[in-house]
Amino acid sequence: MSHNVKKAIVGILLLSFIFTITGVAFAALDIKPDPDAIKKEATDIGGKVVDIVQGVFGILAVLSLLYAGFLFFGSHDPSKLQIAKKALGGCIISAIIVFKADAIVRTLLGALGYKG
Image (cartoon, rainbow, N blue to C red):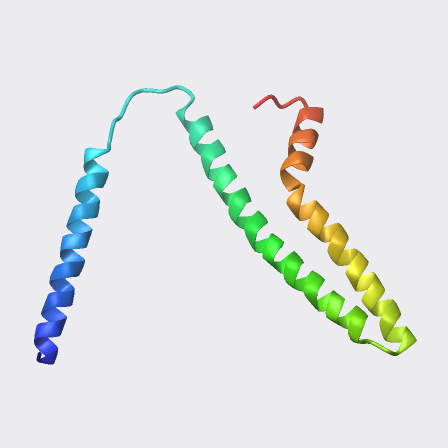
């Protein structure tokens, strides 16, 4: 196959995919007046953002925990062992905070009187 034929096939496949997606998206539009739509949408977006941030920080917490563990088990110098212990403790605390962030935020919002 020549290079131009490959480009044409990829272009046709891409356009067909785009038209399929937009057709499905327009067919799914169902607009009804909803007074709480903005609140629901903001809550949905906020939940998705929290999930993404929690996932990223969760991965970072686990990687930091692994690194601190390697420091702890691989250090023979007492001063480096103290640094590794502090790093390990900090990683454990940060992992707990990251994985319990939802409960912490709900508790704080409940204390402020928000009922969601």
